[in-house]
Length: 291
Image (cartoon, rainbow, N blue to C red):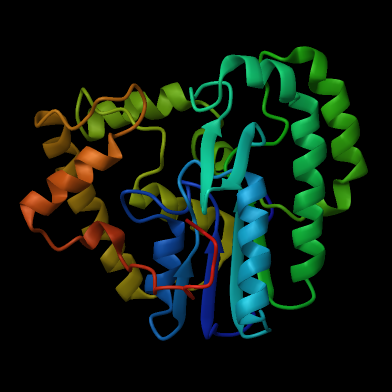
């Protein structure tokens, strides 16, 4: 596993992009960065269920408005390629994995979504973003899961490998995936550990605050401040307590994720200081088409 320095100079602004592995119900690697550099403006542009079309589009919008520079820190977390993002009726529609969510009709998926085509589309988007950022700002690219992660679609593997070789100079710049680094792509082992650590009923496929920090430490070289490490300990402790309360109170209705809408309502009833977030995002420019 290769590591790079997190920063070359202290950032004045931090911009993070991604899906729910970047912005979720509790603090992620992005919020940890915000806490580590408290003097910097912090904009977390992650969006749950977002695909790489959305992520690329928002990067371009943000650069157009803020004009990235060498004193910024920009980290892009690429998502699963099997996602379909569309902007219509003044809002983004982010479906998550198009094969597992019921957002699009089955006939649409069968007739108009091509698995190999998703790689053709997304690898070009990743190259576009990388070429636009790498000589302009301090930038890193990470990913939720391996692009060539084994799947039931074995017949596509050689095509995907050939395409990956074509885009190798760009894909080689993407750090090892969060799922590979933390769990060796084995979600079942994570679920088993979480059942013991959190609650027998707890099952969510997203990293805990401590796991997010573990990913950062395994991916980047950086002398983390004592304040950030203490804040992370508090965040992890509160997260465990909240997840236990959520499970005991029935705010757990999906097979692999906490029910976000009901859980947020539950948090409001507790009237707690949400230390599990570490640091919330500053409000970005209202001209962004990000919702």
